[in-house]
Image 1 (spheres, helix red, strand yellow):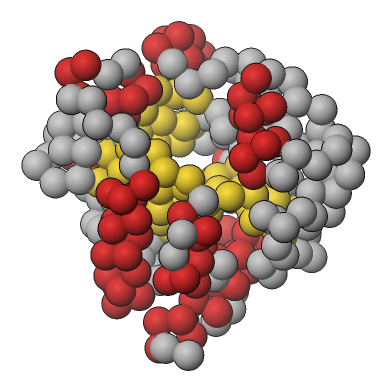
Image 2 (image 1 turned 90 degrees about the horizontal axis):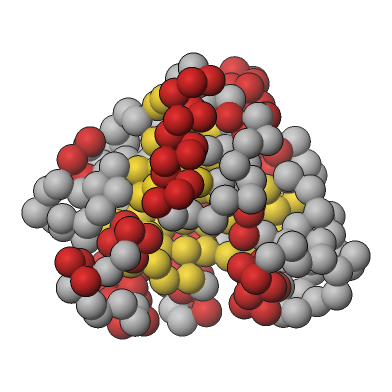
Length: 269
C-alpha cells in the first residue's frame, strides 16, 4: 500500500466542537484533513477521468446557468482504480460517520465538480431534493484539489439553513438562486464563503442551502466530492423525475422501502 493510500485509511478524530457545529450549522469546514501530498497525488488521475468522461463541450456562452456552473462527472470510481482508492477513503468516510452520529456509512456516489476558468456561479440550492432517500442522514464531503480562494469559487453555506425546511422543492436554477437568496438574506443566516487551503475538506448536510460564486480566475477550480449515507438508510419512493434518475444511476433501481445496500453502495466505514 502506498503512503498516500495509507493516509486515506487513517482515522481522523473529529472534535466534539466540530460535531456540534455540524449539527447547528448543517456544515463544518475541517482544516488539514488531507496532506497536500495526498491531494496532489490523486488530482491528475481525477482530472484525467473528468476530461475523458465529460460530455459537455458547448462554449460557456451557449450554456444555461446550471451548465455554466461546472463540469459535472459522476461515479468516477467505476472508471479508475486510483479514483476508487480516493473515493473509498476510510478517513473521509469515518469523518462522515462521526458527524452523522451513526455507526457506519455507505457510498451514495462520488461527483467531480470542475468550475472552468470564467465559469459561472452555482445557484443556491439543496442537494437532497435529488435523492430518493428516507432520512436526512446524508453528508457530502467537498474536497478541493487546489487552494481555493474567492476568485475560484469556494463553496458557500447558509449556516443553520438545513433546519428551515425552505426551498426543498426547488431544483437548482435561476429560480432557486433568486428565491433562496431572498430567503437567506431575510432570514439573517450567516453566510460562510471563506476560502479553502489544499487539504481542507468541508462536510454539509443534504438539506443545507449552499451555492458558489463564479470562477473569475484563469485556472479551473477542481473539486472532488463524495456523498455518504447512513448504512441503514432506506430507499424512498421517488418524489420527482430527478429522484427517479438517481434511483437508476446510483441505487441500482432497488425497491423503495429496502435498505440502500446494492452493489453500487458499499459500506465505507
